[in-house]
Structures are given as structure tokens and as C-alpha cells.
Image (tube, rainbow, N blue to C red; front, side, top):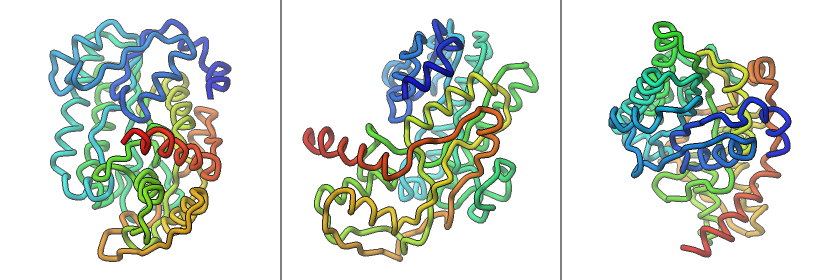
Length: 317
């Protein structure tokens, strides 16, 4: 990953003072390492070190930086998102507003607002173009989180309109990779399934009927997309970050079992929600504006996550 970054981003990021919210989280930690590899001077405090829900704290830590990547987000898996819509809306909007205000007041040069594919409605065109980001309402199982990301995009656009700030917007699809969150209550589908399979759950209980499809992007790819967006397209015109590889949850579970070397059987639980029926993105804007194409296929990325869980998470639990 770092060779690609050095070729495309070395001159832009070298010696830039970069603030990353959510920099101790899954994607954020990978982004911080990538930024440092191309010579950026990175600040990425934890929530305990900087409470961005407090305006004064946000002003203090963001002052003096050239660039701000806003990744910090409260989010979980489908069950958590479905049962905490108000909490997620509140916990995401307040820090976002404070980070925007702090960036404006301290004259940050550029900002990247990291939105989400959860802004899209349940029944959208597939592959989904960015133009459908505000069509109808967000997918019901991600209702509060989806609206928080829509509002973050609106805030970015209005701050650009009124204050002339340079703010880009990206909508990453489901990211996965080493360092992901394997917490039973808040993990997304790939780490959740990997944990169950490696821990020996048999039969493997999969929510829904397995027919829903998703598009997953490996963490190193999404980091490259974010860095290119900051460099090449700092305007409030959303860009999808994803792949053209679409897979059903049934086939995903089968692939994880196969790559794990297990003989696990699968049991579907149709009493639980499927979530959005299909999710896959149009990638034309990313290619045209960022010269970005995700490189990592699931058969390349999933073994890295399986090995990470076995060698680091499971051994230390």
C-alpha cells in the first residue's frame, strides 16, 4: 500500500500538519500509518484525550493543522444500528458540527468529510450512483446513522457555501481488514462471521435468509481513496469509495468457512433482518476525479483478516 501512496501523495502530504478524528479506530489507525509513511505530521487523539462533543476541546486540538480528516463515528452492526437510532444521530452530529466549526475558526486549509453508503435508501439503483444519496429516506435498519451522515454532508456543503472552505466528501462502502472490530454487539458482518467461525460456532447462525448482497472494500484501498480525495477533489460533491465485487451474505459465509479451513454448517435465522436487499456502488466518479480503483478482491483480503483474528485477537482474549 505504501508504495502506491508514495507515488501519488508524497509531495502533497509531506510535512503537512494533519488532524485525524477517529484516528485510533479501525480505518483511522490505518490512515494514520499511511499518512506518516508519506511524511505527514499527524495528530490523532483518542476520545479520552479529546472529547469532540465539546466545542472548546475541538477548537483546542484542531488549531494549527493544515488538513482535517473527519472519520470519527459512533456506529455498530445491523442490530445495534437498528436499536439505537436516536443515540447514533446525536452522537455523530454533535462532534461533526464541532469539528467543522473548529476547522473554520482555526482556518484549516482543507477537510475531508467521511460519510457512508448508509445514506442510500433501501430500494436504490444498483450499482448506486452518488445522485441517489438523498433519495427517499435511508435504509431503515441504519436510519439514525444514515441521517447523521446525510446531515454531515449538508453541513459540509453549507460551510463551503457560506465560508468558502475546501471540503471533500467520500462515501465508503463496507470496509474490512486487519484491526477490525470483533466486538459481538457492534461488529460488522465480516468480523462477526469470522469470529463465530474461528471460535467454533457450528452451525454458524447467519441473520436473515442470506440473500442480501454487499460490496466490501479492503481497508488499505479505502485509505488510498480518502487520501486521494483530500488531495484531488476538496469540494462538497460526494464520491463513492467501493468495489464492483458484489457478494451475497450466504456466499460470503461460505467463503469465510472455506478460507478458514473449517467444516462449519450454516443455519439462517429469517426472524432477523436482512437489511438492505442489495448494496453495491457506482465507481465512475472515483475513477474520473480521483483516478482511484480498489485493487483488493475478497479472496485476497479475507485471509488477512482471518489470520489477524487467529494470531492477535483470539490469542489475546
